Amino acid sequence: MPDLAKAMLQELDSKFEHEINESTARTTVQFNPDTLKVSFANQIAQPSGGGDQRGGPTQLFVGAGTTKLALQLWFDVTSREPEDVPVDDVRTLTAKVSYFITPKQNGTAFLPPAVRFIWGSFQFDGIMESLEETLEFWSPEGRPLRASMSIALSQQKITKVVPLDLGGAPRGGGGPGTPGMRPLTEAAQGSTMQGLAASQGKQGGWQGIAAANGIENPRLIEPGTFIDLNVSVTARLS
Image 1 (cartoon, one colour):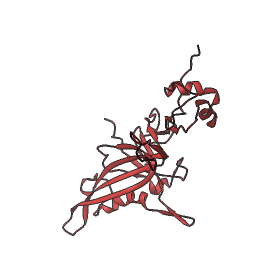
Image 2 (image 1 turned 60 degrees about the vertical axis):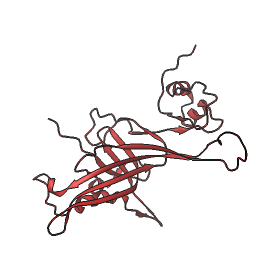
Image 3 (image 1 turned 45 degrees about the vertical axis):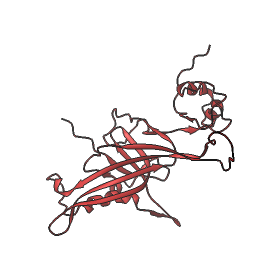
């Protein structure tokens, strides 16, 4: 029976492209989470005023929105494998996760490290927004032996989660494959599919991109529509 794939946390460079500090920052969880919760949110605002206008006010989009991942991890020093290095305080294990919420100095600013959560075909890149650690079981000497950690990661854009291609790739990531997170482009007022595709150097394939996204009128896209410019189908022209 093959070994169970374990989730990992990896540190990324500031552009969220490549793993860095692999030998010191990469952390494999002790127990995989039960669930992963992905949520999407747009920043919206109501226009000021309105007076005696009938009906509800028009909603206005503000910003590009966020995507968040929430999960919970458990650590228990009494449930480690016999060949593991003995640990008598669970905080020795949880400190490796707390590393990702600790700001690091970058010039005159302090910024948290970019982090990637990867588990099998699931991948999420972002910043650790919050971390809550609960110490749950204590030794007679007063050392915590068990802990749960509630983690929230976020990124400042709306993305959709797509499965990683695990064919031939090493377990835990690395190697070629489809990106785990694909950014969506928000159409502004007056956007056209031709113009959006041209902004990505894909002006010759705008028809296929429109078809893949189900855009019926590529010359009149409703503001606020999110479009995946990385997909396409063969367009059939009549």
